[in-house]
Length: 167
Image 1 (tube, rainbow, N blue to C red):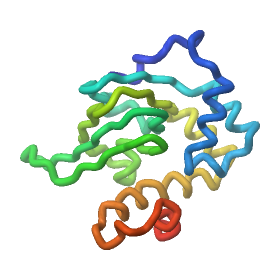
Image 2 (image 1 turned 180 degrees about the vertical axis):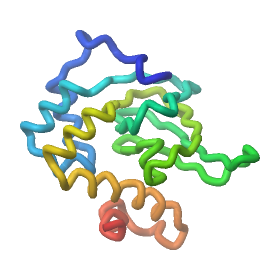
Image 3 (image 1 turned 120 degrees about the vertical axis):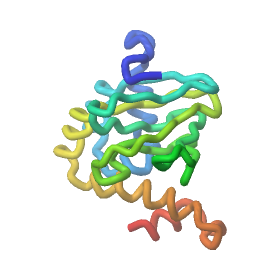
């Protein structure tokens, strides 16, 4: 499953994509007009159980939005030992490179359930951040919230409470 594998543009209802973009917490800072413009740029990538998300090291920071399904991302140290893992469910936003302050960290992302990703290319993400500077902070908040959710002592908190801690 590489960035080039996508759903036929004629099969994608861009109005539906724009509506669904509004359901992602990190994108709520964008105006309806900008969401509609962004929807036209989205790469829609379906995936099946067991598919691997692959990107070239020099491809830049794609932003992945989980529209449906679930994926597991694992990070390994230089010896190949898994040292962290997280599950990306519906509504998750993640970027395999930006998570580490621009340093490329080799991760493996495997689909756990069939679904669909909305993929934003680096140039389109840059465009969106230019239109709405608050988007950068909103996107940073999501990975922090994911890390906080992994802490057992914070398990009783709901999503909005965890996001508030991440700010």
